[in-house]
Structures are given as C-alpha cells and as structure tokens.
Amino acid sequence: MFLRRHRKHAAGETYEYWTLCESRRTAAGPRQQVVATLGKLCADEPREEAGWERLEALLNGRPAAPRQMRLGQSPADALTGPRWEVVDVRGVRVERARDFGEAFLGLVLWRRLGLHSLLADLIEPGGEEAPWPTVAAVLSVARFCGQRSELGIAERWYAHSAMEDLLGVSWEKINDDRLYRGLDVLAAHSRAARRPRDRLAGGQPARVPPP
Image 1 (cartoon, rainbow, N blue to C red):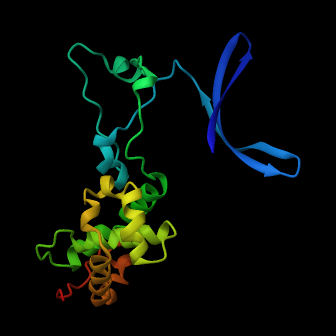
Image 2: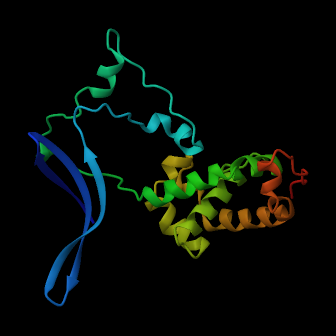
Image 3: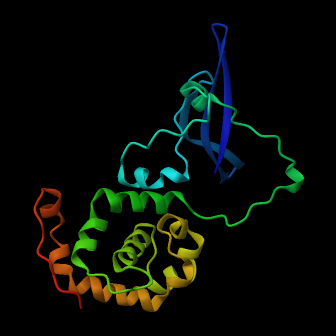
C-alpha cells in the first residue's frame, strides 16, 4: 500500500487530500485501487500533534498534555511551526523498522478495557523481569494480531513489532518459556479475570492469592 497526494483547484483556492492506495494484479495487468480517502488537508489550519512522549495518554484515551512552548513562542506558532527539514537523502537509511499499527490498536483496546489495572490488582508482583500483567498483554495483543503460537510470538513477532517500544520490555525478556508460564499464571486467576464488568462498573473483584 502507498499514499497518494491529490490537488484540486476550485473557486480560486487549492485543496489537498490524500488517498490510501494499493496495487493489485488483474487479468489486464497491475492496477491501482483506492482503499480509503483520508480527507482534505488545509495548510492554514493548525493541527494538534502527539509525539512519543504522549504515548501513555494516547493509550489510555486521555487528552494529551499541551506541548511545551519555547521562550517567546505563541501557542499558534507551536502548532503551525515548520514541518520540514533539508535532508541529504544519500545519507539517510532506515533502521529498526517495526510493525506499529496493529500492535498499537491491540494495546489501546487492552488499556481501554481496563485489563492492565485488573491484572495488576489480581497478580502480586514477585520480582519478575517482565511483570505478569505485561506478559498477559503481549499474549493478548499477539492473538489480536493473528499470532497462533507462543513460539512464534517469542521468536519472530515480538521482535518485529513495536511492542518492545510500546511496553518498554526488551525482546530478550520475551521467550516461549516466559509466555507459557504467563498462561499458567493467568489460568490460576481465570475465575476473577472473567469478571472485568464488576471492575468497570465500580466494583472490586476479590483478590486471588498468587501461585
């Protein structure tokens, strides 16, 4: 898939919008098809931006804190400042490319359901290098992204997704043994974990002793 920019002139004004396209092979040869129209982009409209430092707020659905302004900079300038840099493309290379979209969406759903808080209350920490609620998030998001085995998660998926950056747990700590042990820990707490509605409604589930 790729992005394509379009320009339209109407009533003396120029509008820009983007479409998400993909190439498909047909009997008549390769053809490009529009998957989605991403809307109009107006250069004179200030747009709020969310950087990596606002990740926690974005995952939990909270409004991102306003960006800090430089001394003497107005709020309008902070939003409408330069968005381009002069780059020597011969000296640019791509490193650590990671699959971001699916992993981010899965983790957002995990947070919005309150499962991270639920498991943090149910499972007592025991000095693990990777907390069990975090391991549970890895297992659930991996299933959300179509991963079928713990071995595949540990050997390929986790290292090639953005989960290491999103969770702050290095890929060396996510191995199949830890994932299988995480399933055992979750199974021991499954009775309380089946009642997330009680917590979302304001009730507190009973604390289950750790294994």
